[in-house]
Image (cartoon, rainbow, N blue to C red):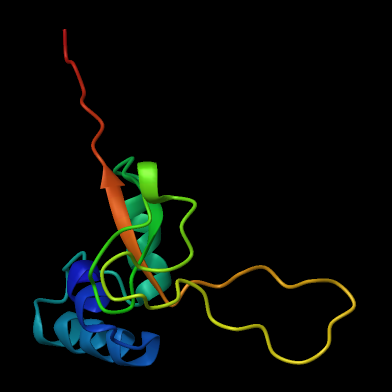
Length: 111
């Protein structure tokens, strides 16, 4: 369900409603979490770590490894970051248009 939420950019409220429906329609003693918070908490115990990698808004490239410092897509020339608006006392952090979660595998050895 978390991968579907990410793939289709499902809002939190919608995710919670779908999970609630799943919980209601299954036997009473099911172990389905009741909302996004509890789902993430349950999955966090698996030890999966996610790194967020900036990517082009059009899906052309990842700003990763050799391209990590680039601010314009080398394929379509789209900007990497959203423009900062208005006057600020302190400069705001650059916010990328799009990010990709990269899940790192952890191998377990049971010797």
